[in-house]
Image (tube, rainbow, N blue to C red; front, side):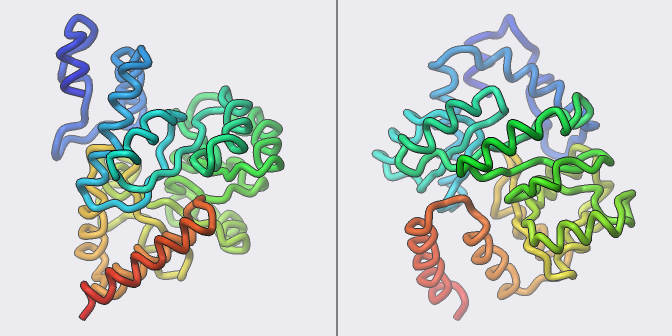
Length: 283
């Protein structure tokens, strides 16, 4: 973002563009920041630069597989030539549904699904059901950000992964019926520890709903929610906060491969890499 700010200093003040280390913002303020970023990223050149920077930042953190929420195919191809981590992009927002369907067939495994995110207080999930059902029927996977606010959204599709899932269980305003539905369908939940604490949907790390679902043996995936947060840091936080052993942390990472939207050949390659890493790390 620093590069974009330097290019367009007239658009925005620096203090508006990031959540700094240790700083927290309410959820609505976080989505205001996204609007600011949209002002800064307003050309193909900007999108390409940001997409490559995001990929390379995750590579530097040791990430081996990345699902990125924009259709920026040229950035992926360039990063592949530079031997940056294997990436699998998927369409973002329903406006790109037709594009996502086309790229599903023509992008050689790069576009595999749709991510639905954005301000959960705007609009209603029922208005999106028909389009999402169409996407699912044509073979696109669905990752849906659900229950960042207290609302039962779109679980009947069902989604292939749930983003956040903050208020699903009864201890935080959800219900046993919601939990039963998620468990019965065995839908993996993307756990974004730092994002939820900084966005103030969770009061502290030790109160994060990761523990609730992890103790139930439900599929959990540790995620960053965006660039600027190290995935390795999220694993460290989970281990120190919830008393996970090194073996348990390893299993979380390895099991996440099965919850990706990657084609089976890529999953098999990742499983092979993880097996090799395990011999090096857990001795």
